[in-house]
Image (cartoon, rainbow, N blue to C red):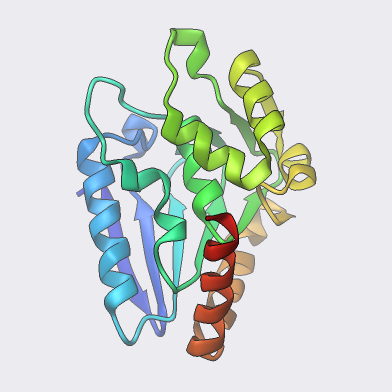
Length: 201
């Protein structure tokens, strides 16, 4: 399995677990992730979802040789349970889109990010759309055109992530946020997420 799933109280943890492949988003991992996200959204005893990854790379991008469902780039809009991302190391391309889909994202100090697909002659509109929804069209376009790598402080300033923590505190910080959200009033959380979704439509 490319994805590890754990239930801790009311938090469903989904861990990208293919570090040897830099947790690249291929058809198998995308399908597993979507299925587990849908299951978590439908599970009455799950109040929040925590997405993290094994190894030094959060997600090394997209396998352009495979067809991925478009839903993988907009799953954050579809549910009424909050998604928290804990990001370490490197997030590239599709990895940045996964972060953009989270409702709250925490990054480890020293993490780096990039929309680097232009370097290999690729452009995925789903990735660009997800990132633009999080940080704005103009910034997302510039990052896609230049393919430059940016830092955790820049990601924080632009709103891609909401907090930066020392690496040894990353899991505790993200877990605490996910637990607090999971134990909040579900109807209120759902109303907030529904308002955010309607505001973007």
